[in-house]
Length: 276
Ligand code: SAM
Image (cartoon, rainbow, N blue to C red):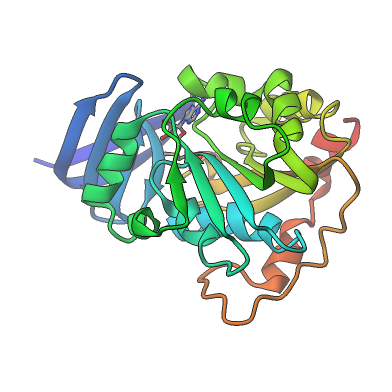
């Protein structure tokens, strides 16, 4: 008998992966957590039935959310990752020699634990002395840390459950206040194909706190419609097309050319954020 994991991505769209083994399943205080072994994409982390990552394509997401803002900042020293309990984003941030401290504000300790146990290639940063775990709500964290961070990365779940507030104007106001002068925020902002209203909503909510916002894109095979958006946000104008070059940065997806290409928006995507 074949066992398939299916995520209903929208009312009329699903992704199915053939599963060879259920490695772990638990109900955490926040969500339903599963780790499955799949034929096509290796190990899969699922929260509340939604694909968080697979071993095969996680590098695209994590390199894109981390290196784009970090290489647009002149010297990122203190970085905050909100969500991201799998460790993939932290792993990429720690590749930057200027970074002295990374704080991981993940609400669900069990996600961190599952990654330590089942995703050794993602959780490499958990033993790095520059990492500080701040288990708890990312919204409370930014509220309590004004003027602290050079870069904030919002590596959240979709806007459901504890992730809802991470897409709202109040959070963006507090996140802007948690940045040091010249600071940058980057957030995963869902699919430009199937979450179009949501992207509009997010940019509207960001508007007041972050006068400068730019959408950028990357293909993520296991996310809804296979194509994903991120948003770079700052108080003042930034030229997103001139990243610093970091010699020796080991990546499988990110290059300066890919960075620049990520900001090229097809008209039907550009129109989502034009008015905002
Ligand atoms: N890259 C993934 C995606 O787009 O599907 C996100 C992966 S990461 C595992 C998302 C994490 O955000 C989850 O572990 C979840 O527990 C955490 N999270 C959700 N809401 C949060 C909040 N308010 N504060 C901190 N972490 C939160």
